[in-house]
Image 1 (tube, rainbow, N blue to C red):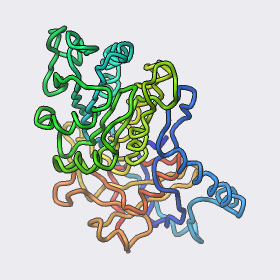
Image 2: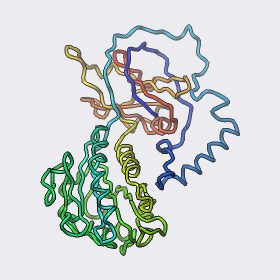
Image 3: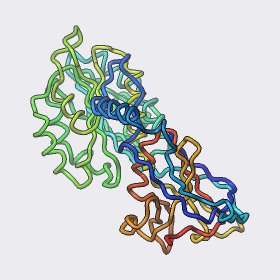
Image 4: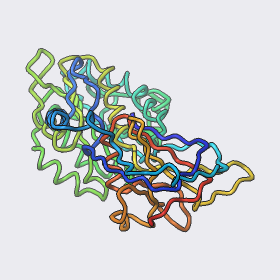
Length: 381
């Protein structure tokens, strides 16, 4: 798993050139097939895996180091000991807004109860990861069909007829039919929209045993036009993926939406919601991470942060380490093979990898980044 560390360092004056390449995207998710989960990226990952195997056969990672250090003379390498400070740095996280729409029709009694039972643990996993989350629930209360009321800590503690806990949890009291979940979601924007943030990653989870009477394309056109920031929505579904005793109809539309948006689909026919919500929480957490942006920690009391004495080291996971070159902005990344820049050179708070370096980092499962303080920053020659 890609990680970030900070430790006492020695400054290496030569600039090492990064010569490796990597597939774009996050490492493949663990296999969840045993619980009927389908990640919409599975087929693409399989194809990428085949390509990787071909490249290895033709002479790839096993035939040489990932990083090319060139012909270096040890006498040309000078090292000076740097006074550095240990601190904690974490990958920057985006907030997450989750809208859960639950079918309240007569065939959904067990499923509604399962959603109610799992919402607290689901949301707590996300909160514990450090992601700032808002949850909106579209469902009736228990006195109207198979409704839901959520207890604390997610809910507000006034069940069975009220459970709002703003801004963390907003319950839109709305009866959802077996086929109109998507229409009800779009039409009720005025009730849940105020709690959705433009800078957040938006997730929609539909739980139903039936098919939608609104097409996937019609929903996406309507939903993404509601407000800025919704065009990157990820749609997930706990729906019928096969004909079974618990299915009214196969949820093809929801499966299509998950494939279109990079969501996760779980088979409602399995009737096991614990691994389903576990997988969804991992998807929300992973989707909120910005793996190539690292927050600069505050210096200890009495110490001053010097933006010109920060370096970033990249380890490919096979023992090859390169010190990245700092550039002034993303526009200057083309000048270097492996680089980084500050979000704001005048008042930096975040270290950001150049796009080409980020792509390589994400393509190497065991790669890590170390942020070193106290050494003169390596700049382009």
